[in-house]
Amino acid sequence: MLVFAGLGNPGAQYQNNRHNVGFMAADAIARRHSFSPWSRKFQGLISEGSLGGEKILLIKPQTFMNLSGQSVGEALRFYKLDPSALTVFYDEIDLAAGKVRVKVGGGSGGHNGIRSLDQHVGKEYRRVRIGVGHPGVKEMVHGHVLGDFAKADREWLDVLLDAIADDAGLLAKGDDNSFMNRITLTLREKLVPTGDDDRPRPKAPKQQSHIRQARPQQQPAKLPETGPMAAMLKKLFGKD
Image 1 (spheres, rainbow, N blue to C red):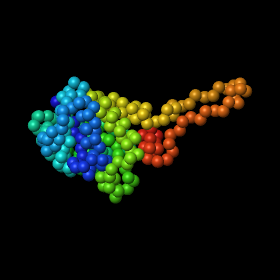
Image 2: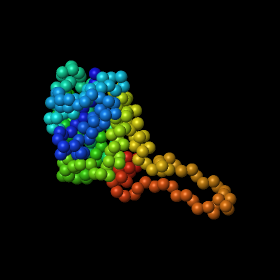
Image 3: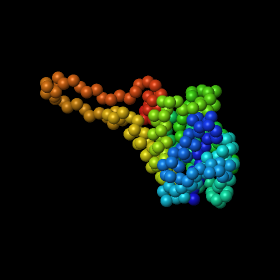
Image 4: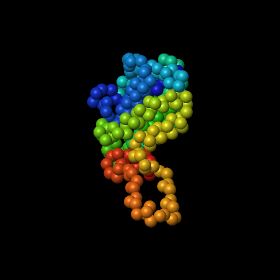
């Protein structure tokens, strides 16, 4: 048995916050794979199902973010599971919006939910870090993570959550690299306009007929140059 925990804060006022993207990921997995209805247990909401041939307990702690470890730790102790059986989905400000990275162990990076988990279950669990971007200055971080995703963010966020749900079975199998690669490919295929990619364009032939030279050249599709979508795509597929 494995435990997949999505982190967030309970209550309608928080449900669209960047800090609640872990809850969103858990909800997407439950919907896509027809998990059981959510019920209350272990100071959280739980749902059961299977992924990749493994029985999965999904849990959304209802203790508020800073005490997430109380809820998840209670579930692990009940089933007598080691930290290695735990996968946690949460927001990461040090990743560009839309990027996903998976690792086992490490520090909390200032994330209070992860700090609580480290205290209650140890550090050797899988962390699925979902990028929500950094506001630029430390003083704005609190408002950024507790702020709602913008309407423009839904363009990439919905694609990302669907991809996480589609490929969650790879995490159950322990194939973290394939999971990350599939997420990246899905975002590239669905968000980058057709006709524009990172491959070098073919060179023009050395000699062309005067007819071909006279034809107007078709302009390649371009990425949007301004706005939230442009910034996110540049961070995902350009330099970051």
